[in-house]
Amino acid sequence: MSIRPLVIIPDSKLRLTSEPVKDITDEIRRLADDMLDTMYDAPGVGLAAIQIGVPVRMVTMDVSKTDDERQPLVLINPEILWTSEERRVYEEGCLSIPEYYEEVERPDRVRFRYMNLQGETVEQDADGLMATCVQHEIDHLNGVLFIDYLSKLKRDRVMTKFKKAAKREAGA
Image (cartoon, rainbow, N blue to C red):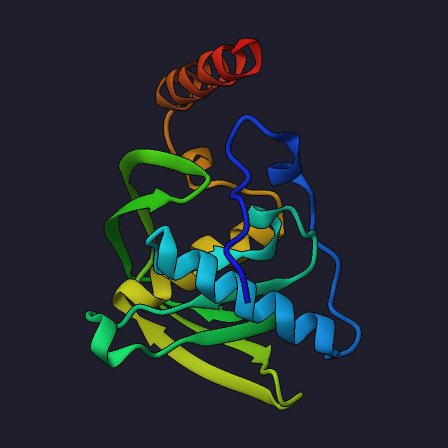
């Protein structure tokens, strides 16, 4: 288990569509452990494999409130089956867009399906923060970022800021 470096915008990897996981191997289990370690260290409530540069359809999440009550979830090949018509606004952030938060409107409730590390198919309903997190992380698997839901002006400002930071870092 190890903490892996995060992929930060404007890195084009974040726009890739991730490939399905074919088999649950020891390598996939190690990746899940590394993703959880990376997510907790950041700290964050969700992480898609592409955010550490691995383009596979795998997500880790933990929306528990305290470190004492951790409830880690590993979602392999997750997909949203249903979304409510009711919508809710949450302030979202992203480990790949550090220290930037913005309100995003999404469906309030979702039903999703995934495979767990034991190879079992699980269907689950979620609302509130968990529903937002599931949608946000599945978006990552499809090359979509939460800033894509913002106005073009806000999105352009964020991208400009991070492109300048990346140039400064490259020149350093």
